[in-house]
Image (tube, rainbow, N blue to C red; front, side, top):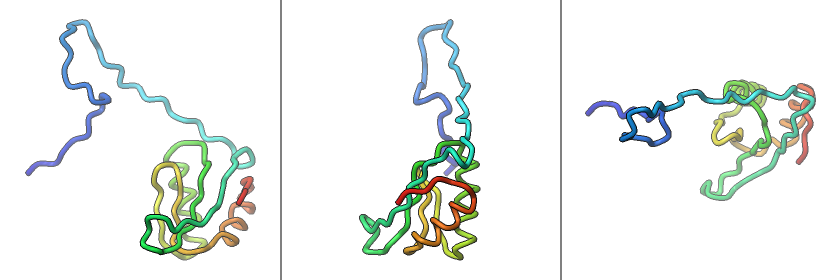
Length: 111
């Protein structure tokens, strides 16, 4: 079997309009400076088989910057995690340590 390709045209398969041209441009979200970000740090156990994770939400910016922040937090905490749906998921309860890391990086942190 071949690899499935994701459609770049928002689900449009075919158009009967001969003059139609699909607009492939995507708007790049501009990343706010660290001191203007309002991040929330919380603990979550829901739908995770009873395992505790720390969630970082509220980041406004590009996916690359979010992934870079996620990598920074994961390496400073020395644990695993992932970046999905505009939130950073860190395995375990590291709320205080993550708050310290983010405030040192000059982010506004609530939690």
